[in-house]
Length: 266
Image (tube, rainbow, N blue to C red; front, side, top):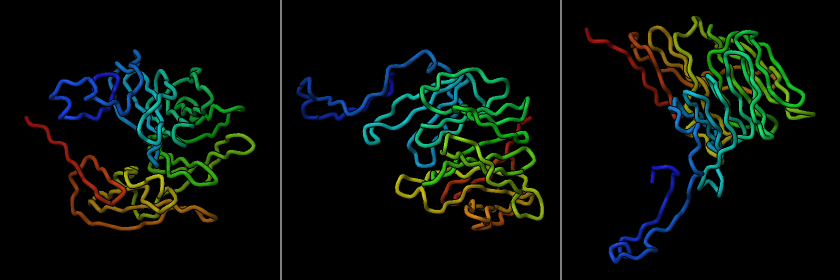
């Protein structure tokens, strides 16, 4: 049932035809709708392992995490405005990319970080706060959780890549692990994050592509993030499409990619 609140039922056709009241058996139900949820949904952002999701709305948004063994979702937190959101650790950590000054948010024991283009500062609102100065950021996303840390990738407008750890000891802290460009002869025309559809609870430590770069002549390059003493980006495959008239691209974690063009009729 898609009308609020979202609900899932088992329905017995036999008993339903006989008009029995027990024909509908409730399996799961979401919480009642709040005023914020009437705002238009712009996009969803999920954790790589799929244990948490953020809803980015025209007027703010909220963070959700799975409950009841994955059969239900519970609302964790909400915020008044944000341009981009990164959800970490099943919704325990939430990062908000906000253009403008930070306003106090009801974090309820969770961590929130904001990026302000005014001072080029990424701030993790922990106790005490942790800050990291970055160039102008165009996109943030999280990578699969590792045993020793959470990890964030920040893409800048000039296609520079920052790899950031959240250290848990003695308190949550933003740590710049590496920053570099992709090892290409020319800067890519497009640089996008790979959709993490294949990253499950059982495979978060397996290697998957993190980035897709697209050159001016339509060459696709798939990249995975290297951890360890010599961090960097390793190309896992290349495809020459011969396409140059593209405006957008998308890529799944199975290397299934699409290039799109936008045409306007006169």
